[in-house]
Image (cartoon, rainbow, N blue to C red):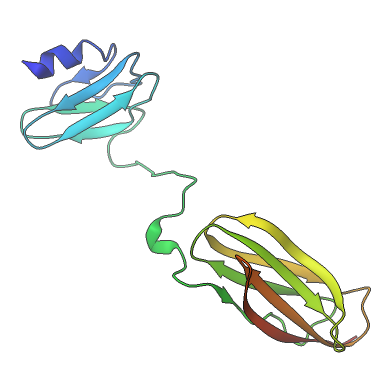
Length: 169
C-alpha cells in the first residue's frame, strides 16, 4: 500500500515492466520501495535510467538502458591518492618549461615554491586550499638563468618533499 501512496508524489514517473519514459522529473520528492530496492529522490530531481526489483520496475530518462553514462564532478574514492607526494619534474633537464606534479590525499592548504641554487626563493607556483586529488603545474623558467633549482612542496604547514631540477638553456 505504501508504494501506491508514494507514486502519487512522482507526477510523471512511468511504472511498468516493458515501457520507457522519455523524461521523468519528480515534482515533489519521496521514496519508492520494494522488497529488494529503495529509490529516494528530491523535488525537481531528474530520475534517469532503469531501476528494477522483484515487484517494481521504474523506467525513465532518455535511455534504452544500455547507453547510460555515469557523470559526476566528484573524484571516486578509489582514485584519490593515499599519501602526500611530490613527484620528480619532467622533463628534467628542461628548457624553458617543465611539469611538476603532486598528490593530496585530503583537502589541504598547500604551497609549491621554487628556489635557486643559493637558496633564494624565485617563484611560488601554487598557494592556497586545494581539494584532494592529483595536480600537475607547468613551470616556465624562460626568464631564469641556466642552473640547478629546487622546488619544495608544503601541505598543512609541513614540508612534504624537496626535489632538484636542472634548467639548461
